Image 1 (cartoon, rainbow, N blue to C red):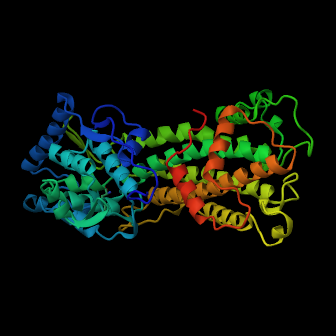
Image 2: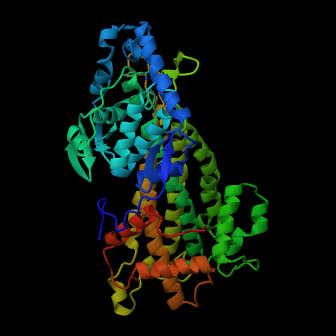
Length: 524
Ligand SMILES: N[C@@H](Cc1ccc(O)cc1)C(=O)O
């Protein structure tokens, strides 16, 4: 049985809440909301509601005295020199989301769209955007009722915020454009009405507040980080099984060896490998004194990712909990602060880095697979890990095509590591003459993650097959520690041993789904 998103995993019940406007939110808060595992709640303490009310009231007061406020009584961006009479200021937000309705490309999926909404709500709840409580409530209601704006993925330069994609959020809040409810496309006004919601009439500055920020790249970065973190653990488990299947040398992960190189993440990966393979002090040099790099140096590849993750988490969470808007409205000092907090440079850096780290893991696993399927390097296993014997061996090709696919996925992942942030284009009449391209970096990163998860799925099939063959035909695989051993038993139940050629696509899809749902508990 598959659910709406085509996954065999049942959606988890919504337990617990995530409160906006209270404490600093974490990546996990956004991803729980994105998977609909938690309910969104707005803080209702006096400190929060008072601050929001003061910000909106201060803007009203400024308008009353006819002050010049960027984006409220002026045009947008380079058009900030154009004065807008107060009588038209109320129409301006509507124009902003309307002329930004020029997105294109694939539409973001449900999980992504929820992450984007949650990230925008986190930022606006900092109380620096001068928005009304009503806007925050409507945004919360979209998340609560799962009314998902249809957001095309392309058209943001990631500085000036994710203006164009976020214009689709602004429009839906106002009952315009299209939303998805329960997977069905609906005109936004109908979607709102279904839940008794009334379209917003944006107050001056509220269009900018919704759109002039980094919520698309930041929400997606939360999802990317979580997937990368799981992948680091999965790639380590796969490496352990690749060592066992190829009768490699676990001594490469010796504790004293790694104590001599003090990168904590790398040491952690080596520790996980020892937890799977045992603390093999004796060393096993039956075939070669030293395994090839894709096995021997696995902690040096996966470990870079492991070492970067805590740093990247902090960067992403700082952006998440920022007022990434312009101008900021300080409700207490009663000042309008003009700056460039919509600039997504930190997320651009984080995602350009993460996609590089993840693609290196794809490359590592692809190389491990190349060793395992090749009878010249796999220490006694059949070519292509084919399980067929006797005359039938001649017509069976085992994992030959799977390896070709894994190579293609790896190549595509590596190709997507080109940094996006260095492709800044001066745009918008040279007002936005330096931009982050953080949203492109993030979309690249998600693509690289998908491809790497596919390579990992191919490797799960490979190690399952390789271990079974070693068990059956040779003197047996090296003993595994309980965690890894239980994992292999589960894999063997899940993936049929391949005697005769079989079309593996359904198996791969099931495994990728499992990876994306973190099916296996790893090193917890
Ligand atoms: N991000 C710009 C605002 C902007 C808004 C809409 C645009 O179309 C262009 C620019 C700023 O705050 O300076």
